[in-house]
Length: 255
Image 1 (cartoon, rainbow, N blue to C red):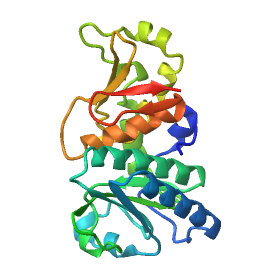
Image 2 (spheres, rainbow, N blue to C red; image 1 turned 90 degrees about the vertical axis):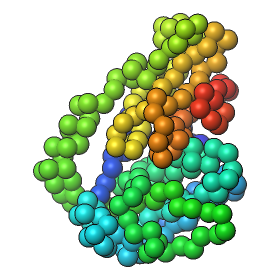
Image 3 (cartoon, helix red, strand yellow; image 1 turned 30 degrees about the horizontal axis):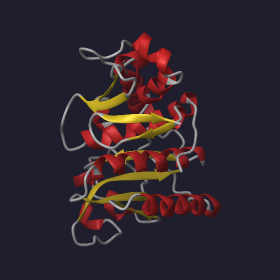
Image 4 (tube, one colour; image 1 turned 180 degrees about the vertical axis):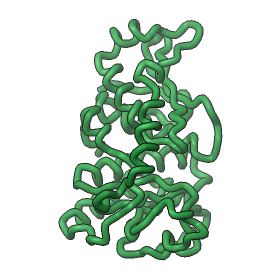
């Protein structure tokens, strides 16, 4: 079940790369475990595994280049890539986990490559591959540091405005026309504007066709663009009641 969030709560999430050694509280861990059980039951194409107190995958300086420290908890997102839209579904479900962890007071970060896959505390089934991991835990005091805080401000200052994510083509409705059709469209676009994405590229764009169906796609295609599409769809759906069809140009169905 996708919980409801307002754009301000979604915006409160930020990428954390420096973690405190304090273990995740048992009550919080129980909530996260329950969330992962629900996710795995809901999406057969993915298998998420939570790993606690397992620092080995992030302990190699050769792999992490000092970008992360204190990581001992992470979510492993493994997928059956033979199933359609597996990467997109994994992105959607991982953002669902990230926001539940954020609501529990934890910091998180999507991690695509800066970890040692051979040291992940999970075995893979036949046909599975690890698409990414999500680190999580309590943010260390002063965790960002001056350099990271400056970089974060630079990234934030370069973020798109919500309206930038609406890009109609020939025959589509304008943003003003689409907003008349969908009351929560602008709130949904605000939520998309604060969604994490690979290298902060924010490649997802929306349009509403002349039948009044909102559709989402990406303006780039790479190893993580489908993951980014799923993340953005989650943020939109978390504030605009309804559900998405999977796939590029998938439609949104309001409740």
